[in-house]
Amino acid sequence: MTDEENIKQHFRPDEAPLIAQVEDWLNTAADQYRPVLTDFLNPRQVYIAQTLTNRRDDVKMRANGGWEKAEMQRILFYPSYYEPQTADFELQLIEIDYPTKFTELHHRQILGTLIGSGLERSAFGDVLNEGMRWQVVVSQSLVDYLRQQVSQIGKIHVKLKQVDLETIVTPQEDWEKMVATVSSMRLDVLVAAGFNYSRNRAKQLVEHGDVRVNWETEMRPDYPLVAHDLLSIRHAGRIRIDEIQGNTRKNKIRVAMSVVHA
Image (cartoon, rainbow, N blue to C red; front, side, top):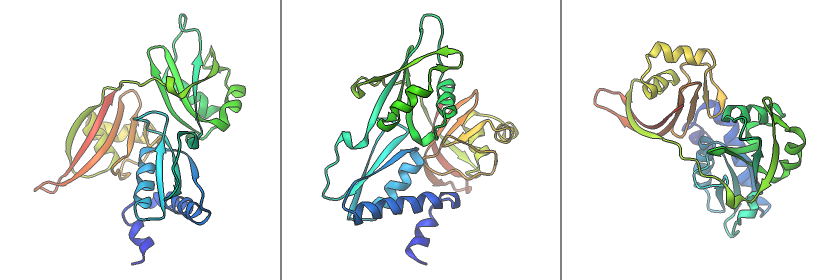
């Protein structure tokens, strides 16, 4: 088995393009003796990048999404002698100015507006809120585009203001840690376990397009989940797969996860 085949057997087949991209970033940083900055990556993608980087001595990586617990982060790959700075990540914090006395915004509205403006999900980071304040972490190169494209969210007129990254809000999500014992790592099985749903209800949610894995709609109930996957279930909440702890004596799988209810 080649080294490349050995790597790929530890990941899902649909992650092969990302593995190839990460290897290309690593090689560029090493061969051209310069830092390489990515778009925003989700937790699973960051984990894959770190796994591949750990196999090398000539290149290192650092991730930054604007705040300590950021889910979406930009990665900087750099030669081992380089000392990365915060400015290298080219992050900009945007605050949404809107009439807070007369209306309210929601996460799904903001996310939908940003995607609807022509952006890929990898183009911006976390959407954060604290009370009535809403902020978005974006790349500096996108600021002018967003300010031109986004003048309302739903029916609400808004203005996007650049603010210092030091003023970023730190949302308090009530993640509940739990350990589930499941028959398999199928998507519908983990959705059922996380929210105490019947297997049939979980299966229907997936098939109806109500479940996203790492921000992408996944309609296959048998889609295999792995550590660091992040699930969003419409009207229910979110599940984070923290660790696969191995098999029980009855050959069930013990999974550590965190759940937050909508």
